[in-house]
Length: 555
Ligand code: CTP
Ligand code: MG
Image (cartoon, rainbow, N blue to C red; front, side):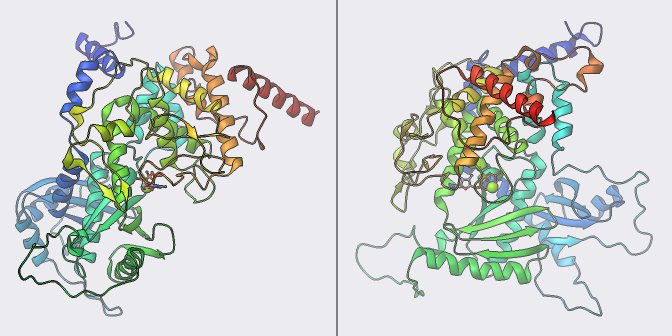
């Protein structure tokens, strides 16, 4: 009806179709079918890795003539895909159809020559397009169409959300804007592949895989690139010993512990990255952390990179988060929304400290979805019970087994809307007994806290660990106060309905947009004693008292 007189019938139908797609629960069968067609994370990774190995990253002039550029490269073979983007200058990612084409291109590339500097003779797939003379006629327009690799600023997002017609649409729109694009995901795998070429100088059989938010389905454009250097195939963990007879084994240096091996591996690779890795700057070796890592910036991609090794449990938790995100579209929508909300209010931060991390927040959303009635996603124990023998995985004594075949997972038909879930999420954590209870997605039920920590979230696989050990009472209090405020705001009719006419709508935030605006309670310090009245009442009086204090101050 909104479209009446404004567009064709087909446009209108398209809108209805999108709406139905977004209105989760109306089409449980379709969701299930989609799930059966899902690719496992390993399937996705293998495909992306293979693409990355056939790709190059080329720095080029912003007015490079696209046609000439492609013609020049195609002399080496067919190009499957290419795109341009900007990061400290313009770059192109080019994927060839065959590896031979890439080899031919690299063979032809020249070594730079300068009179005042010496080159570190390490050749990689990071190249520069040079142009001598008039061979290249620049594009007449302002340059290439660039694929964005970062997301829009929060103020722009708020404006954009204000123009949506329902909270449901605001939530899906936020996900659309924030999630990694196809191109960004390719770039992440390409950077891993470039890094692998460096590590392969020492360990030819190693792999470098992205993990964490780059691949778990919850990554936001601009998030860091977590990488995992895997040398398992080399260390022979998978080799089968004969029962009798002769065999040969490698002579290998021994170290006092796995940790010591990881540290020396990362130390050497860190040096290589620092000294030979083109485009890798600000390399820091953080080898004494619980999980040793090498941190650096990869300038051509603009990614902040964390390289770890022997971090197979994190790989498993990435796989688990990916699975949960694929089970029901509401999972990703809610995680994106809560992560964005948390960032807008400084609950999460890019600086390490006592803040809640995105990983902790994600686990909190998953736990909340397990606590719905009926639950939207199953518990980790249930996923373990559905596992095949081939899914069995024990890493350093931790049982990391869970089902890999998505179609074995039966979901219950919970039809709650995203709007309702968002509101309930805030209500749930407004009243959660953080002082006594621990959050466990393994059990899907709150557990008694095993140790004193303001916020206790059980690590899904290393169950004796607390994922949010770093969080202090102040940060937890801020989280709770903001949950209370947001829950209250969402219950107010002037928040949860779009404002007036079109012109006004464009500038007056409502619904989710209001929740992302600066808070009135963010500065609250110290935990308030819990009262029995509903959260909405508590927050109302809290806001009243704040208003009064401000008035006193002013007067
Ligand atoms: N991880 C974990 N236990 C922790 C912290 C992290 O198992 N206590 C694993 C998770 O799989 C997580 C990954 O390490 O996804 C990367 O951690 P981090 O970069 O902190 O989180 P991301 O999920 O990548 O989120 P962000 O976008 O903030 O980087
Ligand atoms: Mg990360």
